[in-house]
Length: 343
Ligand code: QUE
Image (cartoon, rainbow, N blue to C red; front, side):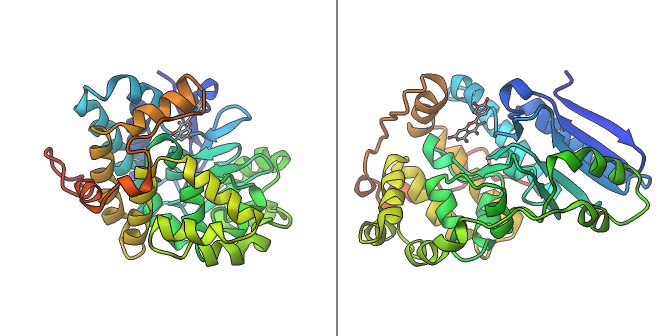
């Protein structure tokens, strides 16, 4: 019942994801509560900033409650479409918020947690931030607006992160412009106090406490990322990686372990997302995810990664060659139940 704490602190509305044992993974109730709280805060003239954070010291938010979806939603279309539809509408609300919005990305920030942070103007990372879009590993796609955000990161960092599910440390997040500020953990309490005391603009308050995340390992990888991941087919990316250095060959091995269907859907959706508004990107993601429910890989991916944890998913189709364009096209069609709307 109190999986999202909502508090008024001075000029700020604080939302705290409060499911620490589940790494603050988002369930449907939490999504609806957050969206309603954003709506209320935006309508309250006394609230000059919204702050979202996660309880515990391990996660901001590790994703969506995919284990529950895998258990029930194969036979419950309304549950599946209800969860993703409401989550994406919440993501869009964050992207269009006028009230300054601060996400404290302390700990795991993956999947659904990226949707709660990446669309806002202030994205604070700490020593414990670990960012990833790992969905190709469970037969999903980098959703929650990922197909809008990732193509806008420098070079091909977004394509690389989406296909491999790479985990980015705080310095990498700053380098990749995923985080706007690095604030050390021991200053977070003070940051929250300053934000509650709304005397100064949010940007100035965060900058007062911000430190340096240090050098990013991505800088040295950047040429390789841009060189290999600029191709417009997964096969071409792999062919390029196969002729590269040890790092490149390792990326190829990782991509080959991911769902072939997810990899092809992801690359196509990322390229479409380059010129798409947040609403257009979310609508396309909703089409894809709706079709994924009737497929195989999501249920097998959740089984292998999160339930049985054998880390050995048997994907079907099992190879990229077996995923043809006609199969892919089905995922981009309007669902029988209609497209996502933002009314
Ligand atoms: C891909 C995902 C998720 C994931 C792993 C993936 C995801 C998610 C979790 C998760 C959440 C809470 C936990 C946990 C894992 O993992 O969406 O152990 O306690 O919520 O490869 O999309």
